[in-house]
Image 1 (tube, rainbow, N blue to C red):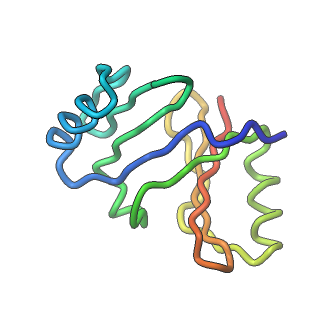
Image 2: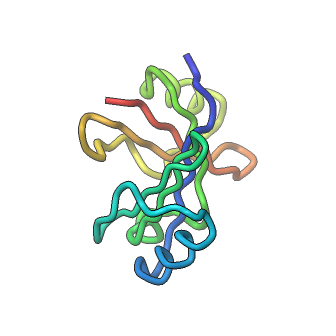
Length: 114
C-alpha cells in the first residue's frame, strides 16, 4: 500500500542556519532538533533538514513516498529501471528509508514506518 508523499528532506550544509530559515518559513518550532537532523510537522507534512544529506548522495530535496513494504517497492522500481542511490537504512525506531533514481534521473525517496 502507498500512503502518498508525506515527507520531504532537504540536504543542508549548515544545520543552524537552515533551522533558522525553515523555522521562519514554516512558522513553527522543530518537533525534532538534533545535530544530525531537524524535523518539522506542518499540516500533516513532515519537513526534515539533513546535514549529512549531501554526503549520502542527496543533490537537492527528496520527496518520500510512505509505503507498507519498502523492499517490495524497491524491487518494483529496480525492475522498472531505477538504480539505488541510498540502500535501506533504519533511521530510528524501526523507520526505514531508501533513495532511488529512476531511468529519467528523478530521485524517489521511500519510507516505511517502524
